[in-house]
Figure 1 (cartoon, rainbow, N blue to C red):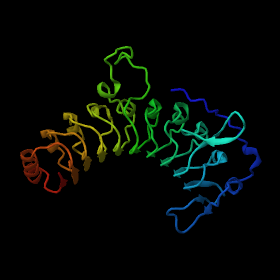
Figure 2 (cartoon, rainbow, N blue to C red):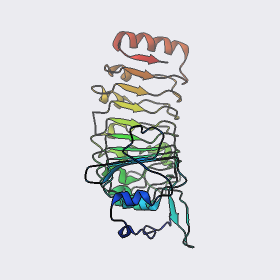
Figure 3 (tube, one colour):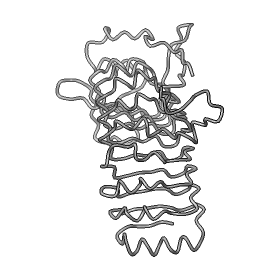
Figure 4 (cartoon, helix red, strand yellow):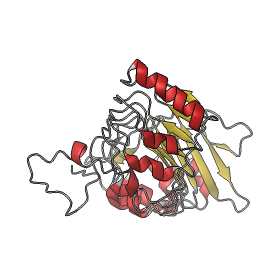
Length: 305
């Protein structure tokens, strides 16, 4: 899909002498270094008068001048839409993340919740290589950019409550895009192709999407993953590769899927402390057997089934 929003958007940062001037230009109040941070718009400024953290909470729109805050390490946008300038020079609500976010290349945490982020520009994400945490939740995101694979410092990935049902748009010899039977959604659940370079991952949350397969778990290079959340999808099969995460995986959520059985590979995850398989298609005798096996093999695990 093509997106035509301009990248320049008439951003003029020369009019600001300091970061405080930027936040004062906003149409809403930004509390500076507040004691209480919950459910409010605030900023954290360091001793050099640089704003390192900005939380925009339920404002009318995200001001374009926010992208002048190039010292930001943390940007959290909750319930506040991105905007862009249209052909008539007016600011209107955007359907995706502004490409200007590429200016904030010092970001280590980017959190977008319930905002307009149905797509993320490939080139913009590609330069945010310092990210350790990426959260895009409840944003109607429909595709993972292939440039996600460039975020090699990423430790936590949360893409819950979206509409992910296709692979990143990458060039690969592993599939034929002209094949009429090539359902990328079913045949190549390549969320994991984009994860191949993310060796630092410790948490993956892809819950509340439309994922059917997780057969490419082995493509995740990190064996330090401690949390996997694939709940509220359409998964009907757990691959044997799940056992490769036996050493660190402590929390596994596969509730609200289409599982009719649980493979024995699950019981190799002996360090599990939480496992949830509720609201699947498991028959009663399978549930009884699973409970007994967990009590025997993984006695410290809190099991919900």
